[in-house]
Structures are given as structure tokens and as C-alpha cells.
Length: 155
Image 1 (cartoon, rainbow, N blue to C red):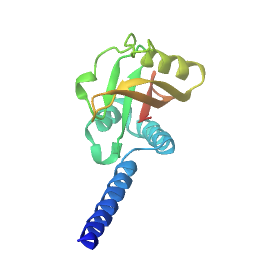
Image 2 (cartoon, rainbow, N blue to C red):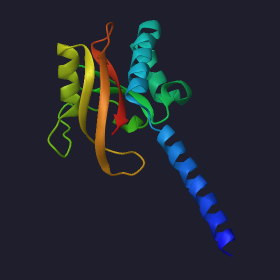
Image 3 (tube, helix red, strand yellow):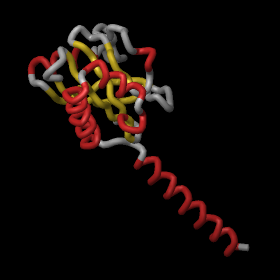
């Protein structure tokens, strides 16, 4: 009987370890987010902003990696692409605040205007858990469009 319990415990341990590893691999890294932003910038250069924004929103096979997706804004704060929530497109997000009072879109705009690219940290609702969680978004100014693209990671 003890051997059976040990076997079941061992199987459960292996299964949980594998599941934990699989879940960990589903989260994008800072390096992956930055690489996706760089690819998005190049895509805008290649096909133009309007087509690229459509692609970022609808072409999940190319523009959604793990839990990473591309967002795009113009410098006024209007969202033009969102790989997971099309309802946010066309809305000005400049005044949106997180629970700590951070205005992520305004911070992104300031960062791309002053430095061209970088990370912005804030709180945001996690799409799976629906709970507020830390998020960091890497943003980069577009050279042939008055706006930027970004990709966020959940912390």
C-alpha cells in the first residue's frame, strides 16, 4: 500500500513540476518583449502604419508570442492596435490611471518623446486572472508615424 502511495505521489510531483514549467514558459520575458517591439517597428516601416496596426490586432500567429502582444498609440494617446482587446482601439487612454495613480499611456508618451524607447512600470488587470498585477511595457517611437508601439510583460 505504501508503495502505491509513493508511486502516486511521485507521479503527481512530476505532473505538477511539468505543469509549473509549462506555465512558466507561457510568460514572455523582457528580452522577448523587446524583440517583438523591434519586429513591430520594422513591420511599420515595411507595410506602413495602417496595415501594420491591423496586422498587430488580427494576425495572432505572427504578433502574439506566449502572453506577449503588440499595442500601438499615436502621440495624443489614442490606441490604434491591441493584440488582445480590439474594444480599446480608437479610445484615448492618456488620462487612464492605475490604482497607484500612474498614467501608463502618458508615461509611455513622455518616454518616447524624451528618450525614444524604454520601459514603463505600472499596475494592470491580468487578462487571465482578472486581478491587478504589476506590468512593464517596453515602448519604442515609430520613425515614420507620430506614435509608438509597445509590448508588455506581467511581473
